[in-house]
Amino acid sequence: MAEDGSWDSISKQGLLSTSALLDLYEVGGGKRRVIESQHRADSIKISRSGLPDAVIRDQKPMSDSALEKCLTDGITPSQWYEILNEKVFFWLSQRRLRRLLGARAYRDFPQTVLTLDTESLVKAHSKRVLLSPINSGSTIMKPQPRGKDTFRSIEDYPFDYWRKKRARRNAVVELVVPGGVKDIMDHVIAVHRVVETKPAEIWRRPGSKKTDGP
Image 1 (cartoon, rainbow, N blue to C red):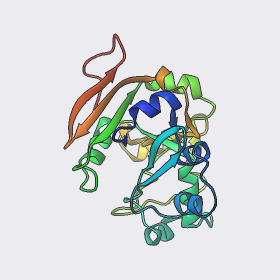
Image 2 (image 1 turned 45 degrees about the vertical axis):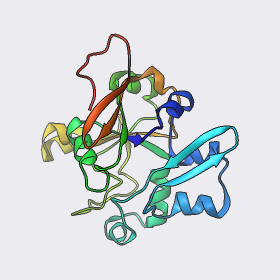
Image 3 (image 1 turned 180 degrees about the vertical axis):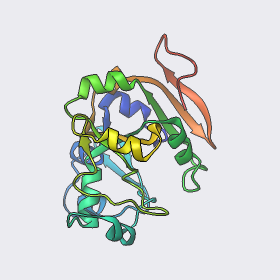
Image 4 (image 1 turned 120 degrees about the vertical axis):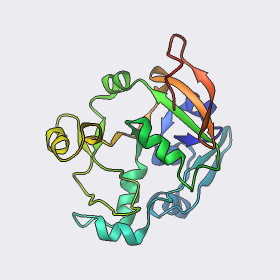
């Protein structure tokens, strides 16, 4: 789920993390600290000569006060924001995606939704892929504990443990790639613009199923 109108840039630059975007747009100093190490109540536009404007998305589902209650290992809210900002995140189910698309903070605003071939993505980035058992960017309702062990490699992920505690479909909640996915075009199946939870196709890989999408 990306910013409306971002597909053209993503298709050329790749799907980049917040930190990677700040590097690309040469954002530093105090402005970078505000974006990277503090809570973003609203989205922030960044610019650089020769590049289209980019938008760093908000972090409305989180708050400092809630993070202070659920962070472990001595991690501060500022450090947690930095941990999240160095990664890109993928939902592993349509159900969770649709829940976010329908959330009050986002449902009235157009969103760009990328549907990926998970097998292709994991094969290409297996050494970098991390898995999370929680929505690491949300502290709404009952915040789940999170810390150094939240993101685990495929080999180290305790899948059996989470499968016994939850339904199989919830054993893994997020797939994460640090830095981003520059070869995103190798893995995208379809791209849609979603307005008020209604998808309109922007791009589709030849030969893909019409049912592949949000």
